[in-house]
Amino acid sequence: MLQEKILEKIQSYLLQEKEFSDLDFTKLNLSVPKNINHGDFSTNFALLNSSTLRSKPLELAEKMRKVIESNKDDFFDKITIEKPGFINFVISNKTYQSFLKEVSSLGSGFGSMQNNGTKVLLEFVSANPTGFLHLGHLRNAAVGDSISRILSFTGYNVTKEYYLNDYGNQIALLGESLKARVFEKLGIDNQIPEGGYKGDYLIEIAELLVSKMGKESLLGEDLLFFSNFAVDYLREQIEIDLKELNIEFDTWFSERKQIHESKYIAEIYNLLSSLNGSYSKDGASWIKTSEFGDNDDWVIKKSDNSSTYFMNDIAYHHNKFNRDYKVILNIWGADHHSHISRLKASMRLLSNDLDKLQFVLIQFVRLVKDGEDVSMSKRSGTYITIKDMLEEFNGDLVRFLMVSRSSDSHFDFDLDKCREGSDENPIYYIQYANARINSILKKYNSESFDIENVDLSLLNSEKEIALIKKILDFPVVVREASSSLAPHKVAFYLQELASIFHGYYKITKVLVEDQSVSSARISLLYSLRVVFANGLNLLGVSSPDRM
Image (tube, rainbow, N blue to C red; front, side, top):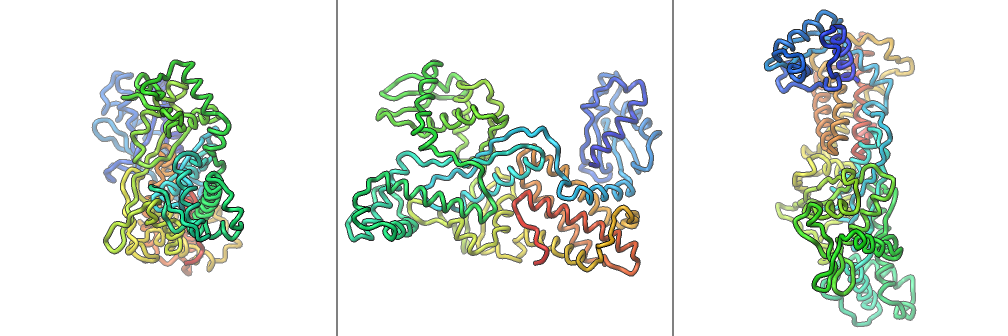
């Protein structure tokens, strides 16, 4: 797109001078100056090569400027230098206008990148199947799915995986809690165990179970039956809730089946032992993570011979590393930060390819209602589920808000302020811009419209040029969001684009008597529609034709 074309022009002009022919042009780059008076784009190429050419940076920048200036056509409007050695470029309006044709021709592919199909295993959400998903999981889900969409859009081959923690003490407690609720329905005294799950959702599951099976059958079932029934039911509900948010996983990895029943965890114990990576102390088994970058060693097998949560995670990640992926990406809650160092140390012990392991940490969501915090606890049953949220709020609003800030910043979800159509609802502002655009396009006779025959030089107002510039920023924003795993950058961009458009719409009539002017403005709106649709899709949000 535009930046690639600028770099191509600069390189071709400089290579015409023998003095510059041996320079490393892979270092040629562009940035956007913070001071708008310094132009549209800037390069520090002179600074990077001043020592190689034994020249002062500012003098070299001026020499390069003159070479480019002597060759330039109407692509650049102005080229200047700035201390300590930057070369600044003002792009001509004609250049900006001409790139609208590329936006139109690429359509849904505008902003995408060709990559080598690098395979990425992306694990996110992975909430324990001991209750319904709640607001705390929602941000992880929205960020994870948006990252998947952005990576796929930029040429990666992404597999989305949910790690189903369906084994261990919490699952046994879930089974005991359900059994108590079932017996309660059958008129048999049976208390929920200490530390068990007390949410009303278990009453619903118990009612379902009682309706499907007779009393005698249920009385004959063991704890594993109740645990498995609860897990299967809750997993199904998790899938349903995620689909409501336009999120679907490619694979579900069962800890019970794929780590324990398959005896995979025993293989990892043996592997650690063969590598002299573990030892026994105080009746437990420990992993030597302190020798591989962590501050401490950690228990992996308790004195009762059961594996720790950490050991299960080691086995799972060893499984990940043995699959054919170049990138292993985990989206974790910020409360797991301390877990990263020990896991990396474990993988360093077991693998030579630690660089493939990456993490994105998600800060907490604080739910606020009537100015007060709303606590979220599965075991006490006092939490707001995703299902609750979607009954009150539009799914697009919920998803957008969850990615509207950097993942490493805390987020307050204020139930009183986030009403549809209010000033606190940024997605409404964006979707309304898109709906306005579609309304105008429907009024225009587009059957014979061909952007190749449009005089785009008529898009010359300050607002129109600002819109074109912003449209052409989209591929850069997508690339940055992909490389930094930061979907909020797309959200910020769409809000800025919508703001510029609404300002333009207030002062500009698109369809006027002059057909040439109307066609030019329609071309601009077509490009805007492409960007809104592509950008919103990257965030898993719809782009409705009407509001």
